[in-house]
Image 1 (cartoon, rainbow, N blue to C red):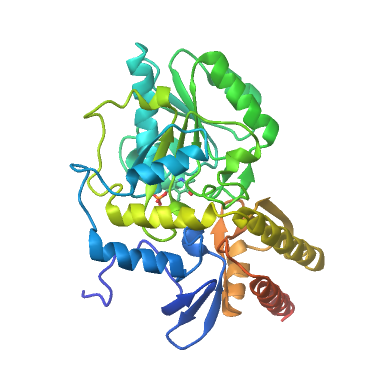
Image 2: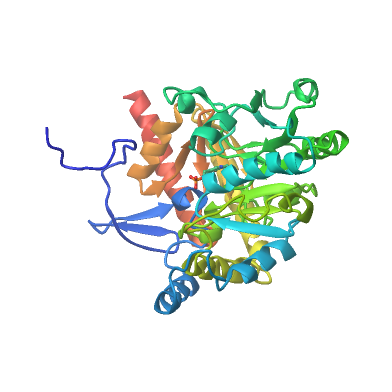
Length: 396
Ligand SMILES: *Cc1c(COP(=O)(O)O)cnc(C)c1O
């Protein structure tokens, strides 16, 4: 039977067609406006149509799009230096997505121990509820049955532990352990934060056993949580870190960041990427940092985050039958639902407010970092309308 739409039926989007976008607003083909608190799942950090990004893309398109890593790529050294100057890292390798950055992180961790004469150290400890991407390896790392089932032999070398079980963690470390991998705040997993004390504990445990600490900051990174990287909220540094979503702000860019000692294991020929770090991607990545690293930008994000969270907390007080808490850091916000999260998300969409579902029945609210006070007021109005509609439907 023929199909109207020849794309895989992997997603089931609502019947809305967006035609244009500006700032935090999306406009559909009927002219209806939506407030975007999805940011393309924490991607559109600077909102839609940011003038500096648009200008940069146009200018770079007229110079060079793509070269491959056969040649020195304009912008790679500059972006790598800026990422390193503002973090623990000494070296950066550019890829195109979160999963690619995670794949390389896993390879680098194992190769580090191999290069040190400990090839038996291959196991990576991960945590329940984690999400590290959709490759055959990273679904094993995440350990979630719903993503693993039906895809053949499960990649070996991942030990998935309960979230927050310190004793299980200590018991799991042995002579085959290569690294501990964690999201400072689980995104897909329901905006679950690793407490500061546990972050410190992870670092100490890794140092004690000579294993690597790897952070997956694909979702939390690039200003989303109120610091350039979420782990900087805790003063704990990893050995390896994957970033992606926000750094391209809508252009596919990912990166693995590493210390000198760890990166040194990835010698010539051990890894590669055809598209990774191409001139267009690097121009955009640099343009994103032009804005995010500007004096006062992060202060602005934190100010907006405070008033946004205050607004949401008040709604939790007003609608305790529908939502029970506000969680997360900065503008990586979760609201735990008391009815099914999808019901509230759908009601909000009907009112012109877009949010994302996450695990543990949480609604993820991920506005662009450039959200305005007026946008926040509109979020409040739309949320109230949606929550009232859900209440009214319950009574009917
Ligand atoms: C989105 C995400 C990934 C996967 O990124 P893709 O670009 O979709 O491959 C990995 N880890 C975390 C924490 C993510 O949020």
